[in-house]
Length: 204
Image (cartoon, rainbow, N blue to C red; front, side, top):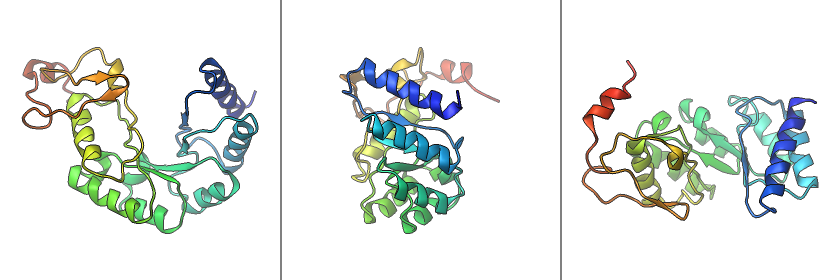
């Protein structure tokens, strides 16, 4: 089986498992060419499976390809994450009408204020945003929550695996109930960190 067919099979199996009650996000992480992306999108559309969006299906430096892909599919196309390590790339994606959804990340953006500047570009074009997930510990997850709660352009739920972490560096882990992460109101971003755990998980 060609690898893109395996992706279709996996998404179809997940859709069957939840009786079509969830919208999935598919991230090929730049692994496809435009023809493979069209085949996947068309196969899922023919099966009645509507992705919330397809993230970075083709190379991030190929704005024209993203635009052509968007013209050939009804599946929303998202750009972000690695795309935004390229300075002003979100601006170029918006200017060329190449994406339906943006996925900024605080790290490549350069912090909260820089991410809000990116969000303003998307907001002017009426493009919704969802924050990217970098398998983040609580401190960045809290920064994401504050950013999204204070920036109306973030209209879609953030990607997050925080609920699955076995441990965290925050003294008081963030609260998730019914699939919603509470914006912390403790001092700083999320209250004090556990210095011993910071040392434990430090990467030198």
